[in-house]
Figure 1 (cartoon, rainbow, N blue to C red):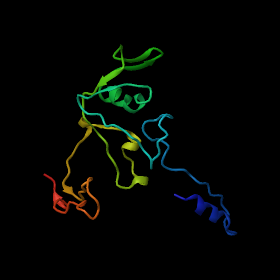
Figure 2 (cartoon, rainbow, N blue to C red):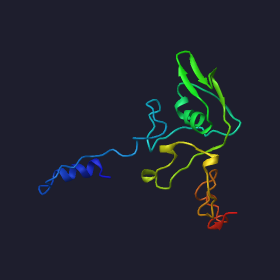
Figure 3 (cartoon, rainbow, N blue to C red):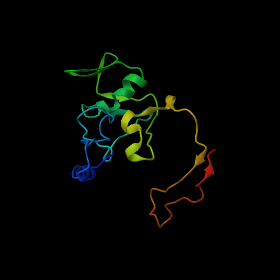
Figure 4 (cartoon, rainbow, N blue to C red):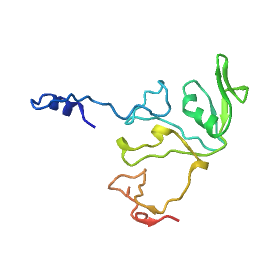
Length: 158
């Protein structure tokens, strides 16, 4: 993508005969599709990933995040009415998830179509299995204090 700085530099050239417009990439189409979160491709979350058997309190703020799981993947009816939230025609303010969900993250933040765009992936949508551990990091250690788990890198996944 063309940055604003590069765009301005090109506009100053005498040999430029075509107008170039700056296109803001990355935030259109982020999941969930609402105006409440103000999340961007670079500053996304915090977000809680649903787990089977876990009950959450439903609010106007978190309903857009979990609505697709409740409605599409777990096959419930869901209505937002003036007096509250209705799931399967019963008024409720909680929901217990029937499946585990996963958050898929691409390895090229600005050019990856991942869960930031399409949301949670239910366990019954995951197909295949890993074949290789490419890199393994210990989140609790520093880069020069054992962060890289050398014994796991380039090992076959069982």
